[in-house]
Length: 343
Image (cartoon, rainbow, N blue to C red; front, side, top):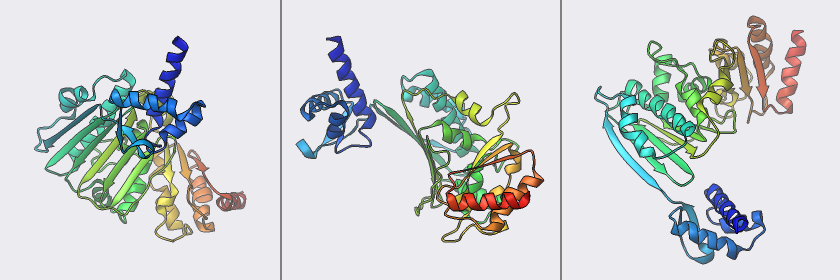
């Protein structure tokens, strides 16, 4: 009996973990994975619906399943100068999150206080909204303000070309418009603690998903202010310490490693061929000891661009390690060419 019970729990756990990716065919996918009949899976689906772990719409073969909200919470705060993120966390947000493992709660503590403080100190808005949607598997939080917009603010105060350039700089870390009160590390580390992290502002969409070293996207959307979404499994082995250790190794505990999405230096169909484009990619990377250049979705680079990065900059900064990743054969050949020329 214990074996049958354990098998049933495994099936239910699998359904809950995969239903978001397979809302219309979760029965088929589960049946194939466990080599059992769809009828057997249907019994588990019915049980999960009855337990209110799943929500179902439609009938029979046209049924659509999704994780049911276990807890939903929403509150709006006035940005009147009286807010303190630690007070709101302890009084409102932590109780709203419910029971979670300590390591998961620590991640939420870090993520909420960092992003809520950004709204307080930087948005220039009149209000900020916080919402929480918790299911049996994941929790998602949104923090949204009606201020100037994070990308536009960075663009203006740093004298950058546009919001795309602001995203490029933000993705590197150590960027802040208020260096007296902020280190500029908050978004970089927070985005890597969560399974999914999103910022929508000024018609630009800035995202990172766990498992992708660098997955910063742009979309043609427009909205006032800044909205941040953070999503995390309710049970994960990830910890804040693991993330900090990944990018701040060594005895000095300094933030010494960054990842730069090179494709954000491209505009439209422009190729990465000039030294000025290379200098844009390399701006402020001298603040780090290790720089990972992610060439994902970059089809080719010109000789001048490659030479500026892999010969000129390397010679001027011998203490900084440059590591290209996700480079295709054309990019690799150009990098090898300029390195050979340099020697």
